[in-house]
Image (cartoon, one colour):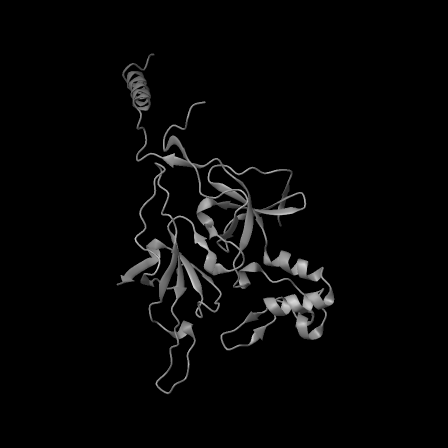
Length: 155
Length: 134
């Protein structure tokens, strides 16, 4: 069978996701279909954020070039001591890297190196990524974002 | 409305996931016993930063039917909440994956046979212009 005229090299790069994995995916991603009585969702592999063991988001293993951050608590207040919601703050959000993905999958099957590692303190773009609720280990919650959305590493 | 199919097979880098949406969770809760339902709804209720417990499945109601499901005790007939309104991870189990991502080349017509084919087409076009009788 002739391959496409251009754009595709004919190489097929296997994706990370395996059958049976419990995955976390982007909230607004995918197309819902029903097969018999079963509700299914068709996703692009890039929309899969990571795999999860159990219900604890702290155990998330990010996919690709994503990183799991523990958000730093923001408690902005006025000079009079009135606490403001985090949405009223224009401070750049910060966090600490808890887990990093293996790197972005290239077309040749290799991976780009990740610029971050677990434990790095970073400054990231506001409204980037997908947020997850807080727990005891992360009172301000978690956020998963692509490494491109991280602006500065605070060494 | 969700389309019904007999079977689906993901193509390329697509992934088929058995989704567990918020609506499904609400339906699951509705099938439990009243006590278990009350407990589960209490556990899954959203809590604001100030500690105010929000009725998880009462949001988005159009009026009277949106009474607090926990306080009213009637948990079977509340309007379901769309998953986008929940700050909960959207998770699912992978049912099938495609064969892989088709790698792309840097620029079109990389192979020599494609270049030769293009030259052939251009040559025929030029010949047709020079010899309109043919």
